[in-house]
Image (cartoon, rainbow, N blue to C red):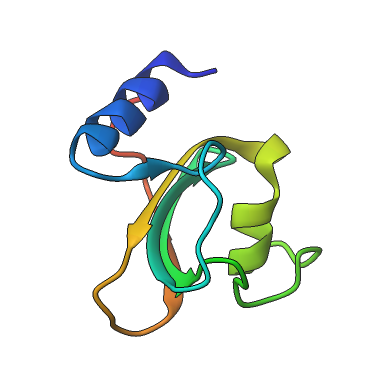
Length: 94
């Protein structure tokens, strides 16, 4: 586990986000942040049914579903908006 990633996750949890591997994803629309292979993936999807193929790298389902490649991940219920995902640099120095 990456200590800085854990601190990042805990800061988000204090603001109402839920840990991805601790809470079951709901059937509704969620916002998520996942640190996956050194990149921060953020987006919105239908929690229990993420878009894409679980075996296709780069899909939302792959990023959320591959817990073995995930460093940390959080989610919260979404207020609405467009479904999708983007990748960016980590919010801290690794």
